[in-house]
Image (cartoon, rainbow, N blue to C red):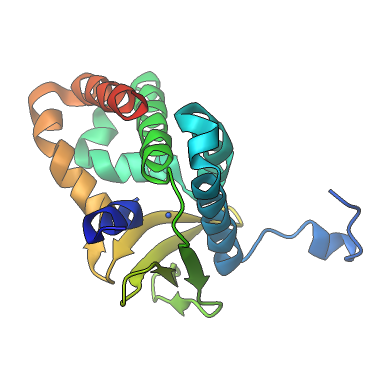
Length: 204
């Protein structure tokens, strides 16, 4: 697998319980949430050619919506103009960004060459109350790819709000930079149309 493909992938990622009721119903910890998300990505990769894009999308979408705080990520990508939007515009933008995010992962995680994720069970706690879950994507390259998941507790549920490549390259900042000129020139409607176009291109 080429280094460029590895970086592309990186930027993007019952039986009855025997536990007591309160533990069985407890929300997963940040590392558990990230581990489940990474497991879903590996599963999509292993089944990639068989499932096709549509199948990978169907497999990953519920896991992505569970692990990522897509409404908050949309607001952060939009920046200050978000406050001027109507609730209807905000909802449309969240859905367009969510579909784009799902399509991005389904497109990138399309084949398997022995990759595996290693999730550190001890997250770094920040003064803000957020935590960072550290992971490594191990491939056939000598050096693993470092991926750090910034997570926030929203109403008792930990979700990812940003992903950092090599500890410093923010996916959210990259998206904000990519879309800022579109927002300045055409507002939310222009960004929604661009996201829909990009989603269609990824699924093609």
